[in-house]
Length: 74
Image 1 (tube, rainbow, N blue to C red):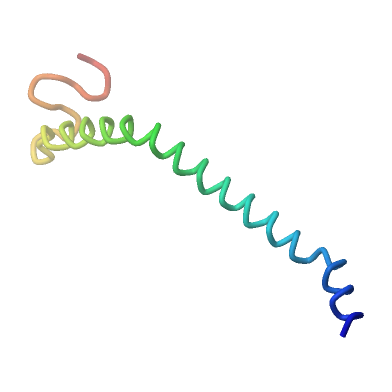
Image 2: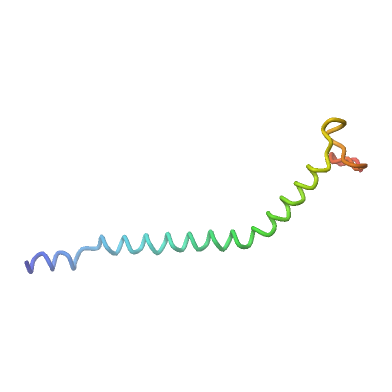
């Protein structure tokens, strides 16, 4: 029984698991931080794209909205 406890105390497999858990938690935290920073810009861009798509009349000319040319020829 004493030999089993000594072997368990010397084993490093638990330490490796703890390292992976800490690294995974750090990556998840970093991903959440990036999402928080980028989300406002993505939301503004998607709103702008939705407005542009709403203004297009594909039956007449899909590249022109109300008097402005989307392609770049204002």
